[in-house]
Length: 327
Image (tube, rainbow, N blue to C red; front, side, top):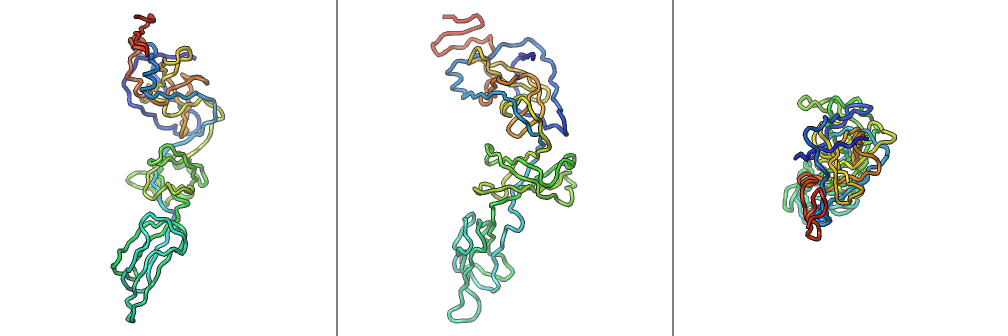
């Protein structure tokens, strides 16, 4: 496989959108123009200062996915409104928003407006295990029979409402696997499944709401959180893959920094062609072989380091150039 060495170009890291349908939809990279530069050669100190990290290109199955954005919501039917049948005033609110409660825990006390001496007191307790989603009254506030006092939600399972473009709807089906990456926890990779879809499209956005259910045992997913979703539509049996963070560039000019096996602190800018995108992985159909190591952290900064012709000082104060040591 021919490796192409390209001049360093200042590019923002961006991946192109996923292929539109089954089969490979490769990104075609144009031939490089201009003279090729040599590898970027660093010292151990520079590697440490840049916090460079690498990963090995491996052979593994790759899920075929397409992306969508979503908002976390409580599951309908898992939210209970606490109300009073009689008018009165709030004496005590025993919980706060976000507090976890058990069924039967005291939520608030209300003094009834029924004429009596003393006025009757009513205690309201949690109807279920869950989280206090909203408190809608304050001590001393009025209580009316048609007014909700608190909302208690079971968030052990949540619903992520995705906005799926019309062109992708043919690939959506109930029970379909979906990967969920909350914006608040970008390192998390949670599993969900398609539960149902809305009955109509948004005329303004041309998208359909797709309801994805996901387990939330640790309660990290909260209503209103944003999440990136990857709907799984197929799988490649074997592919050369690297972490998505390794790939830099723009459509038609994508590259990675490959660590040279003969020089542990030298990195070669290598043009690549992408295949399918998995959520944590990206398939490389040209440019990298299994076993190659690519930079996954610090690679963006590596673009701005001089090429092989640059002289840099090593840890001993020696200057290196293309011809070797110079004292």
